[in-house]
Image (tube, rainbow, N blue to C red; front, side, top):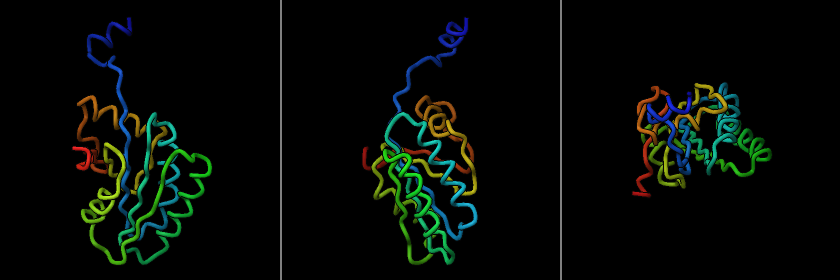
Length: 153
């Protein structure tokens, strides 16, 4: 019964999950970055393809860079297949420039930008990509944007 409903709705297609690069622009986010990255790594661990996490420290005057780097190192020991790095800007350039700086270095076919003030559920990345690739839900929420990597076009 459920299979028939699924087929009628057109939701039973197998999704090919592309490699993704998750870009997190942040400035002075030392209080929340560790908790956020922990939720992001747990969600990336559930994703069925390559994941790359890129934190862009946009000229923070606090310890955002150091905390982000330490958190990424901690979770990469547990999940070595998830790539992670922190890019540091010497001066605040703004969110758009921080994202552009990371896109120029990204390996994923899809780029996902996420604000660092949210927490993700374990299946969030899988659901975000599924919604994007399936064509339903291209505008998820304000905290998440998804677009194809221009280097793959």
